[in-house]
Length: 544
Image 1 (tube, rainbow, N blue to C red):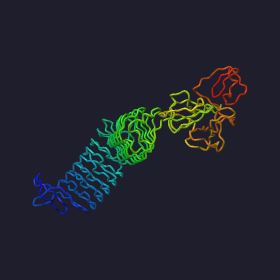
Image 2: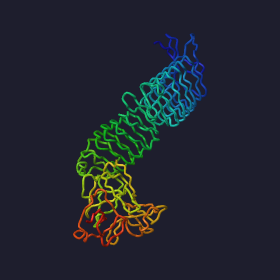
Image 3: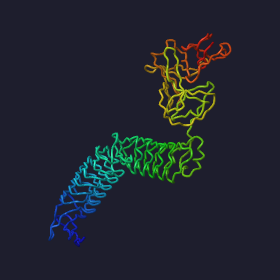
Image 4: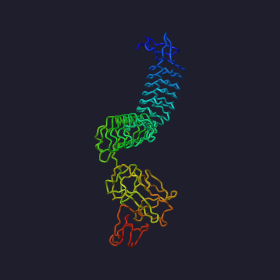
């Protein structure tokens, strides 16, 4: 290509001329106010203006408007970067590509009209155009580059047309809503998820603050949520196997994250600079966590890892975790203390609660963690599953998977027991209410009368509390509908029925004489029991 030796200025605009094709390209200058780019210029010959060159208007902070002739077919890299006063742009119909960084930092840009021939919007093209509220893509667009609309915080209702084949990570991560035209054969936004999914691979390519990740997603792509500062929580489904490079980097509002067990790769910088992130849970099954995955998470307080053998991690993975506690499975503390790169934490604590049962053999408990009672019969956990008003019977049902913040009755010999944290996946219908801080209770609260587990006159049962009683943190109480209480309730306790215990048939004279308390099925204490079914020390006993 033969260019003229020097820049030619025509009506205040600089051009570079091609003497073979008689075409002209707008080149760099210091422009301001309102600019009109004509279809042709004259210098001895007539030259058709076909392009806006690289950096042509870059940094022209006083440029207010540009009118571009339809002869222009390309807009070069950095062409309008940092033109902060530019408020609108109409891209001519013959332009096929919006160049790299071409409108980056045009913070005053509110409207963009794309021509009908645009096929490619390159990386960073409209990066940080924070005033841009809407964009309409013509059906000619086939690709949108990484971070193309990153930082366009005001952008709403983005619709990806059926023509688009590829969208780069982070392209819309700070926008408010995203959807894909239902006719698109390559991409979709299934289940109104506010994200762009690659249909064939089930990879989530681009998300935003309002994304709900569908349950059939296999992977989260590189930079998918990069810089999504509006995100405060996200649920990663168990179908996900890979979390890509910088997938959630810079999500400054994110507070908690749970990485499911099917994830075999958390790639580098995946959660870097999530500066509000306080809690991370890594489920059993996760195999690889790459370097700097949680670098810069300066608010991190706890990392819970459910993997017995320390997985290999790289230097710097948790480089800002000096104030965080690492919770590890029971019996694996020494292994984590010895493993490379797991020493960056304030302390390493095994995931377990210590529960002390006194001489009474029962008590209530409430943990802020899920607990696993499946490995022992020495101590059992029960919920109150039902209350029979006509008899005053409280039925206790044994469970082994106890969700966090669940009030339970624990039963066992007087001792201190170590219970590992569990998955907490069981959904229970429980009448007990657990408390995680000291709580003042009155006897009656609205339509309910409050009961606590206590021992009175040698008998263990649920008794109505006295007004102003303080229930200690980590305990539980039982609110019962006042209107449903037996008329004879008074100060006596409610009978306890354990539904996992079988009825025992005994001789009244051989075994019952040493019982601490004998009740009928109505919860009334019996001094001289006769034949029939009774409650003795929390068990159903048939006297013959």
